[in-house]
Length: 293
Image (cartoon, rainbow, N blue to C red; front, top):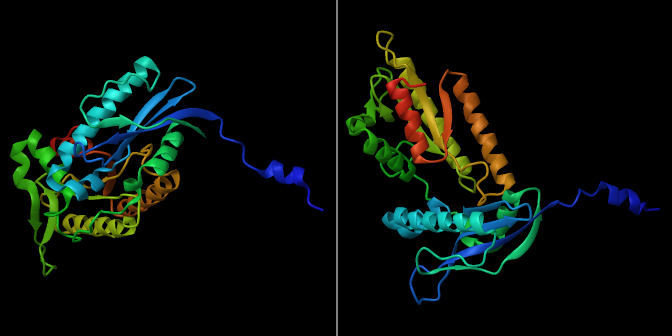
């Protein structure tokens, strides 16, 4: 005989965090009728408000190419404006859009463990572009066409133009028939970079990162004992753990790949660090180059 009380006891507790959420729509071409979801916003019963992007940078890059950065700047402007409105008014009503073409959708109620969980539900229910894999693979040793690497380099050079000559440097070894291409190679440090983004291509990018770890090991073992570099590091771009455009399962899988890279680097005393933006990666590289802690 089935014991229904026992079965009910095994069910997980109903999430207790209550909030309302809305999608934020943008009409890229005025009067076209086309709308895309660029962000989602949530307002919890506890008064907490949070607005997060629903369109990832790599998707914007695939759609708008060289215009993607200005497009993402527009999204950030909209997010900052709505965040301020929610913080001060505690309501979705009355938002003064910072530019034309923006519109809030109808609000919906949701339950989750926290406000990030609500936003993740919102993305999954309103932002189809977030789930698509547009990211085109690049050659494993080619930084020239790597959009993340280019943005990282440009941010460093904008702060310290004198470091430009150290990017995409060649390293020759006596034992190799080919020169290695290293992302940043100065007399002080050797840095490679890569990215890990949840989705169908994550294992491919994991292989790229492993390859770049091996290149750093080759540099370390062949640069000579007279003037060894002080640091060898792989800096990997990854989305933040609370990025609402990815599910918890996707973030957990990403964390596992990061841990695997850390284990591989630790075996050879090569550090692996992660960064959620070009600015954060730039700060790390400059700290290494100039000896800051």
